[in-house]
Amino acid sequence: MNEAVTTLNETAARDLKVELNTTLEELAHYRFDGSQSDIATSLEYLSHLYVNLGDAERALEPIKEAVKLRRDCSPADPTTSMALASSLQYLAQQLSRTSRLEEAIISTEEAITTLRLAKGKDSTEHLASLSACLHNLGFYFGQKALWKNSLEVMEEAVQIRRELADQEPSKYNPLLAASLHNLGFYLHNLGRPRSATTIEEESAKLRRDFVQRSQSDVTVFGKHDLAESLHSLSGYKADLGRHYEAAALSQENLRTVWGLAWDNPTAYSFHLATALHNSAAHLHKVGRSLEAITEMEESIQIRRDLAKNDPSTHLPHLAHSLNTLNTYLFPLGRKFEAATLAEEAISLYRDLNESGTCTTKLAFSLFNLAIILRSMDRGEEALKAAEEAVRLDPSLRLKGKLPGLGNVVRAIVTLWKRILEPALHVPEYTQHPSFRERQSSLET
Image (cartoon, rainbow, N blue to C red):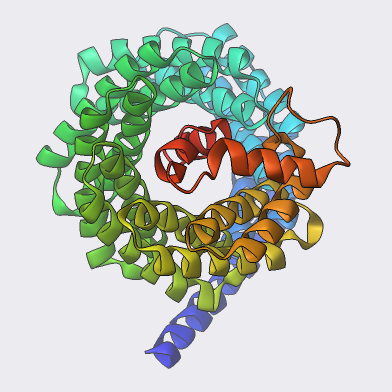
């Protein structure tokens, strides 16, 4: 199988190189005999070929030159404006892929201005292009966490796509759903969870309808988009305290992703592990602990397999699932299993924390382990873990109770008194602010 895939990839690359050489020959011919529009078209195709060969940097120069040529074309022809806007948008996509977000924003804004000033700007084709530019601009603003800017342009994109969908729902409803999905995300990040929930509910409904009505060749894309909306919506519902609805949505999401992973495990194993983890978190919130444990164990199994081939990507997720599962097992009295999982998570976080990016997660893992070990009468080990946790993350100290960062011993004693009393440790540690904060993070 691997040899066949390798041969296929080599054949595809060889074919692309043949196309590339042919395009270069045509481009040389056009420079002498062709129009500016013909040259720009060949340059755009050349850029596409470089992208398909995985060379994003080399793809930039031909599309930049194509944009320059299209700017010089006569603005009297409406198709000229459309072509320029299209080139600017493609340029913006390549700039974004090469982490040049500021330039991508500038290019997209020029595309929007071009379309707003174009003749025939009220035509369906122009409005569709304008909404696409606005949608993409909102995405680029979001990449820079400029949520208000994202919200403003995405609201306009939604408005235009609603009008288009009224005229041709089968064509534009999927695009409207995509803009609604992003709009909900921006509203959520601006602290408007109810509005975000309402918007995402509409997106999910449109995507459900699309999946139910789609032919098999587009169902995969529709299910992928539906899973995105269900994932977000379950999180928004949980933020509003509607945990039973969140659990139901997460189960629907899991069924959707299961179907995708069954057909294409290579592409969707990561998504399946994430869906299992999130579904477990929502089930645990509504008291379905045994189901939550089963799903978290399945998530861990998948993440172990993924981490074998790509540890840098998947080990952080594996550590997170291990850490979460130990908090499910401990209240059920399965202390030894919980301690084993916590220790494995700590080991992973130590390896991942060389650059200091996992300090807080390592501290919480140590803190959880200290609680488990204390309940098992392993006092010295518990004290050592708690001491390191407080040293790594001083926010674990109880405010107003400690004299300073240096008095770690008093910090630990305070922790013991407040949250680790033998008779009360299970109910009281779950009330500690750091634990509640950690638990809520599982739903995001």
